[in-house]
Length: 92
View (spheres, rainbow, N blue to C red):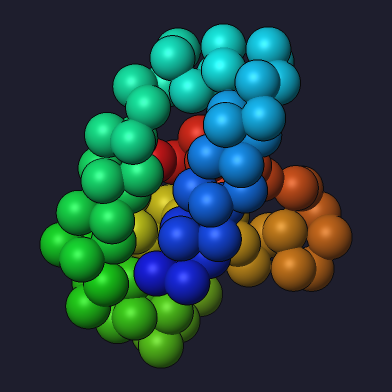
């Protein structure tokens, strides 16, 4: 995830630096570099929780506690089996 965040930020910065008006508008709308700093902080704060949710499977009929990491894992699992795509950026 750290690498993915850095790659996306670098790509967006290249577009902003090149003067792409859509990239500049998105950069300004989402808070510029603070957006990527927030994502890094979120990932750092939730990495262990995310890993634990990924490694556990609830018993049939059992519900997971509600949290962003388990929601992301459950959404990812739905996406992998093709039943419903998700947009990860919406979770950050």
